[in-house]
Amino acid sequence: MEIKLTLNQNSQFNAKSAKERIKQVNDLHKPLAEQIEQLDIPTNERELHWFKLGKEAILSGKIQRQKDGAISKAELVRYGKEIAEQQELDLKRERARKVIETKPDNFFILRHDHEIPQFMKRLRQECKLQREHWKNRWIDLGVKSMVAGDVETTGIDSYIDLTIGISIWLPYLNEGYYLPYGHVHGIDRIGKMEIPYEFQHKKDDPQLTRSKVLEAIKPFMEAETEGKTFHMGATLLDMHMAVNDGYQINGLIWDTLNAMKVMNEHEPSYGLKPLVRKYGKHFGIDGEIFTFDDLFGNCSPAPFDIELVGIYAIKDTLYGWKLFEWQMEVMKKTDKLYNVYTLIDKNLPTTDFMLQRTGFNLDSERLNELNEKFTSKLAELERELFETYNINDEFLWNMTLKLKKKDIDAWIESQKKRIKTWEERVQKKKQKLKEWEQQGKTHLKSYKTTKQELDRLLKQKPVAATIENLPDKFRITEFSLTNHNHISYLIYDYLKIEDITPQFERGKTRSTSTKILKEYFETEPALKPLKEVSALQKLLTTYVRKLPEAVEIDGKIHSRFDSTGAQTGRYASSGYDGRPIEVYEEIKERWGKN
Image (tube, one colour):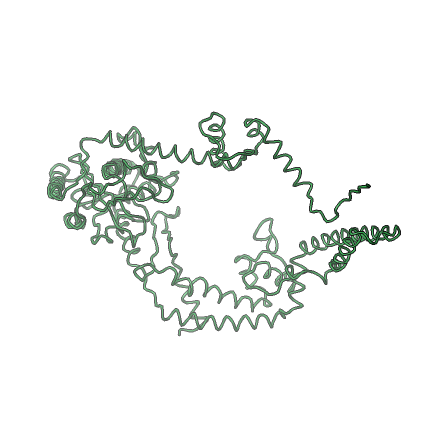
């Protein structure tokens, strides 16, 4: 019997894949340490840390692999991430224990409603003692007493979230209080953050009644003669939370965050803990200082143990008070900074809050009318633009040839290779069939199979590698006024306008940035249709259609005004940024008063 082996020309054998599989098999027989040493090292700093943790744990036998086969970089990174998360959880647990075990004797956490009157008595006594012994200490601030405050909240949404407790530092009595009333039980995890059972708020753990606390503290918090210092910044979160709870914080005349910005505009961080870590040695604060994230991660303290949250909250007010005293004394030694701050800046938290909270009413009906009017007008202007610039099939084809040149050239080269491969396969099959025919072996099954394969190949003949046969996926079928490449083609290739980009943007060409377009619109009459469309698009997308998206739960638009947000000394705004009144004048001029 004569046996002949022939190579299957249609085999999908991939030499590269085969080499990779052989390598994987060989890797299985290498020691684990050798496999790991041959892995690529992550370039991302965080992933590199996880990679090293995973590597050390695997090689030391601290953990066992969860699957067989060659080890990979991703596997080590995953192990390291799990280890890092557990280490952080263990650290949080250890920090929490340390906080509770080292609770100062002058920290008081109220648990029962009958303790509220006693607290209020101490608060009144604090105010009385300050009037007697610190009679003129706060005269420049315009108040009779000063305390430090802080609130713990369900979140950071200024218009939705509520407080779960309030802490106050009484400096003359040297006492701190935390009044909890909104902690929740039964939550052991928030997102990826696990809350250890020992530090969860339990169902039977007593806390105060919200309404009774708020009723008791409201008169004091709203008293303008009783000064308060908080650490807030432009968010003014504590003031927003108070309004959500049904009262307003008056007499808040020292924001330690803003004061720090006035004193030094180059601090790496203006968070309370980083500032105390840096400057605490000047006002008697030393030892470990834990941040919110150190204890609670990136979530609300509401599900956490009241004792833990209370100690943390009181420390915040203590830190805030010490920072306030130090800031005030330093300012007094710095030219006229103290005079300016006590005359102007002390009033800004209340002013900024009024601006933020008041907000702007939105005329929704008028906006809808403008949207309909401008949308209709925009469609008309776009039609005129397309007609003016003859944006038709020929235009789109020429734009395709220009913008897709690299892709087109690559397709032509690739198609030539496909054609060559096809021709070689056809030629081989024809040659084989000819040999069998000459040998009289047309009765063989392989002859019939090869002939069928040839027929299929001939039907699958690749199209010629010419521009006319370019696949549809490469063709630009519509002109988009929001596509910078399309606008660039219109300006520089179709209209052949001289490129001024290098005069404004070093190293760049053919720009369609707002700055470049503004220059063209002022000097190039040929771009008038594009200028009109661009102006109306801006009105629609920046104002008419965007304004409703910025509406808060109260139906108004709120901006955040920051008196220390700009190094020039001017106000900065965020949230919904206000725009100059000239915009309104521009709309009236272009589209009429109605």
